[in-house]
Image (cartoon, rainbow, N blue to C red; front, side, top):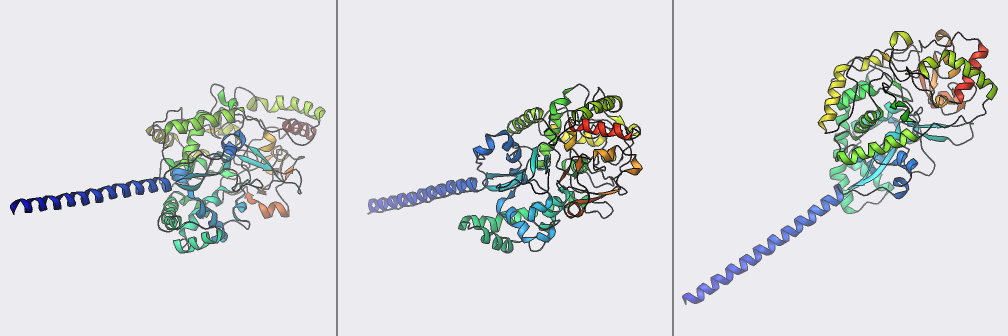
Length: 495
């Protein structure tokens, strides 16, 4: 009898252990499946298509620099925002109203990248700000130029658009999912992920930017306007997270072609010479787009190296209209006598005191030595070594190299003079109000059409009496006879 009971107890014990192991095995399998699904739906990375990765021009325009991981917006949320909130854009036409460069047949504007990191995400790369588009006549499609200044881009309107959408009470799962369902059919799992995870997180992340973007909502600051960027304040408020101060210095988005010209000893970069070299500028700009430390420094710096090599070799386009060779030859004489001392000499790319050039000082006031020290510490804290930002007071502006100057209008560091012809006028005779961001080119005055019904409809108004908008200073060459001015402008077309 005792033996029978013992055998029965042993059998029950074995069954319990088998059940326990079966349950544990099931939990392990379910855990593994859950972990795989979690990785697959949120973290797996798929390479971008070959047509982007294998073509340097397309890679610059649409290639990922890694910003999708932390700064990316889920694709379908990004897709429906202009449809849901058109009133928060500067005009009709959806994202096109922001002045983005958009090639026919492309899903996204130039500089907007799409990559799968678990799910499809949209972020930006350098081309968003550094692509120029121009038209030679009203009835032609625009020509897009890689690494040129984004003179049509309304960057501040893009920043406001994202934050304003997130602040709107209509930005919720029900409304966004309703709009997404009109455009595509997501799987049940993907719908649940968007509804319960991606939409709430995206709203939270965008609202976190509201504090950092506070200065772009100030009523006492004028709009930046198309083609301008308050770059050093962006660095202060995003990279080193300083509290908002009273500085305001939007300046023209620069061309970044032919970067090898900055390899001369002693040259610095940015308008006020606040960065040592091209490598540092690319790192800092890319970090600003990433919005966080890189996932892999090796991968990140590999992309920086590729960008530096591409931009060093990339040359500006030639002037697309006829140039009077005889007149240009005479213009070279005027250039050598009046311009070369700053723009084609050992002084080029090296800071000139503000008193010597006399242009608007606001850009200088946005940055200082302490800011540079703090920003350099942030980057070194990521384990990234570079020469970095110049740890010295700023007291002037760099005379720029003039390669491709014909395509870099408007002129002066703050874009306050619409054309080269206008720049050679005495400051008090230069246009006091004009419209920035229209892409129709004026080959006679050398710049973009800046007035008239279409320029006013498309562009943003620039008033030189407003803060950071002054067109004073740089009186060099303004006293030349008109014939010499015409010859000089003809020569500048060919640079």
